[in-house]
Length: 144
Image (cartoon, rainbow, N blue to C red; front, side, top):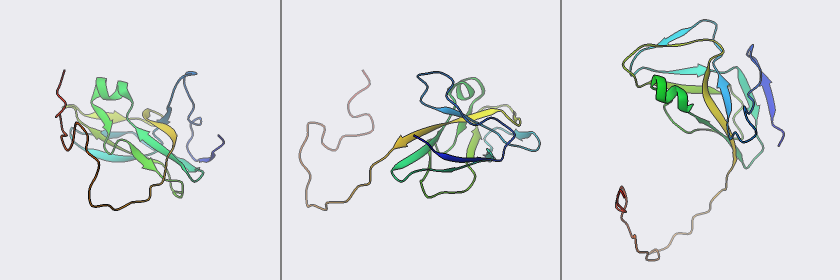
């Protein structure tokens, strides 16, 4: 799939690191480093602008290593970029650790997944079919 992209950062375009990678890393595009204090959140620009085909979305997700090792994650994960959005891709990062975290220009801060999606039409009814689970949720199927 070809996707139009404008790159206003000084970094390479996002790319897949391995043949089986689902996501491409997004890098911070900053004029100077930024400190993210514990429990603080910020929007970090990437310098990237994309034009997605209708029926395709881009999902911004956390990088597992950054989350596990530093407590840095994407606050609205997954963040959705719609096909009609033309602004800069921004990443909402939050620091869930107890230490300051420095975001440097060019640092890999999130990953981008390109995915198809469906559009739904509602069929309003008076009742739904029965299942064994029924309305049980939030752990109702157990933990083991």
